[in-house]
Image (cartoon, rainbow, N blue to C red):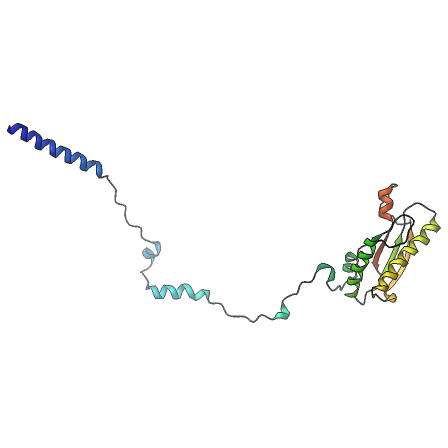
Length: 198
């Protein structure tokens, strides 16, 4: 009987020991992490740290003058000070075959060109009329002049003084496209707007 009781007691201790081992894992204790600043320098009070950090961030207020800031304008309506800028801004207009009549698109383009010219009142423009290669030289020179005058007259109606606008005809002499097809001919029937040197 004593053996049975002793065996039960031993079994009880073994069971408690086994269950206790299963619940506990071996964890290595790591050394605490010490910041480098704490090793290099003695600790500083919190108030001093905030002052030191905030001091370099002080920004002196500056006066901003509205005149110093550029006011962007739409690209087409920027004041133009140089002749080269104006030539780039003005758009060409195109004509139908054997015609000097202004199409709806040509009139819309001339309205935009007039707005640009109003922003540069001291600049004078030469309107050059061009034709395609079909027709005689004399006929194309006369047609190119009619095309240039049609554009000048419309710009005058839009408020551009006549003394700022001169006309010239190149007829078929200066083709934009040297081809001999409908695409080339359409490109060559146009008026261009060039800053006058006079």
